[in-house]
Image 1: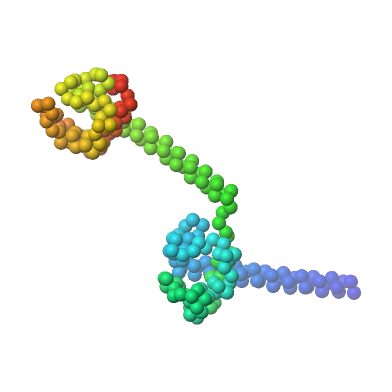
Image 2 (image 1 turned 90 degrees about the vertical axis):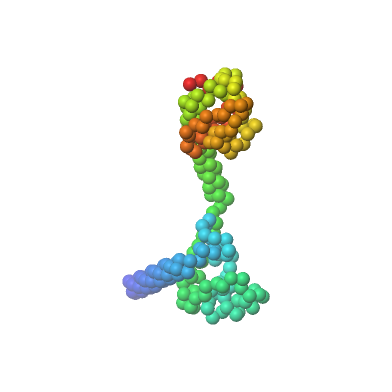
Length: 234
């Protein structure tokens, strides 16, 4: 008798396990089909999901907790459009894709599986990481700027600008001093003066054969001297 009861219990357990496994497999397939329908309909073109997508429609992260199945079914089922409009009390602002009943079921399974937005702790970590990235980019930009200034200094000395101009108390006096030139002239004005020199004090500055990039680096150097008074030594 005891052996018979054990056999019956084992049989019930195995049957339950088989049914449970079968249900899990079916749910997994339904979820996967819902995901495929979601992607095929390009829902992300209007909705957002975990920071990706657009902002025309509601965020879908955790949508299963925010909306019940009956509402979502009215929203998605091709046979319930009029019922949905009656529910919200006005026509839809944008045409929304609608699906057959079995496709809606798969979509609802997938939507219910979407996790909610990250916790504040994760968001804080994300913000911290983003802040570190910004600082890293700023440091890299600073290195590039310093390299451009150093190159501009070489261009300044190579073209003997100190023969006429002065900087830091050294140089010529036949052309305007270049100390704090950035406080007197805009960048575009300085570039124009270098590219298309005009007469000043009955003298015309020779036109240096510089490319736009070279002029830009030369101007970077001149603007960097705004708070300096020392002469640009070679």
